Image 1 (cartoon, rainbow, N blue to C red):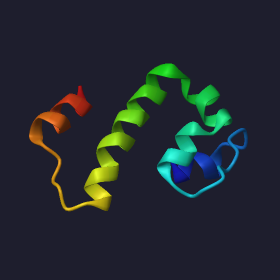
Image 2: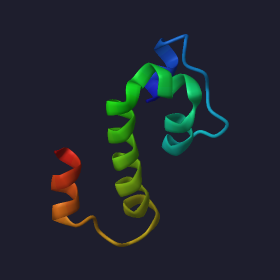
Image 3: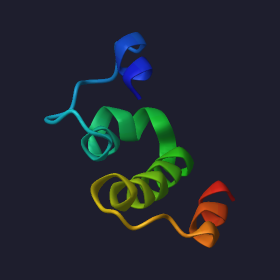
Image 4: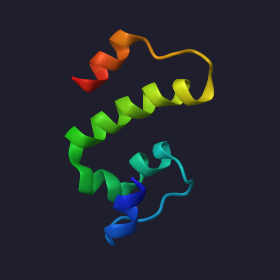
Length: 67
């Protein structure tokens, strides 16, 4: 995401420096399209608990995210 924000002048920096803010920024939504946006939401939803808690991601959750 940092690379995209740096190299695509059409993308605006979000209000916060985190994945959730980037994927909800209007210019990213337009550029990414619904398919990529839905995948980014899944990654964000699985990544938040992995980063902010001690609960590991379940193997089935990881497999579903890759699909």
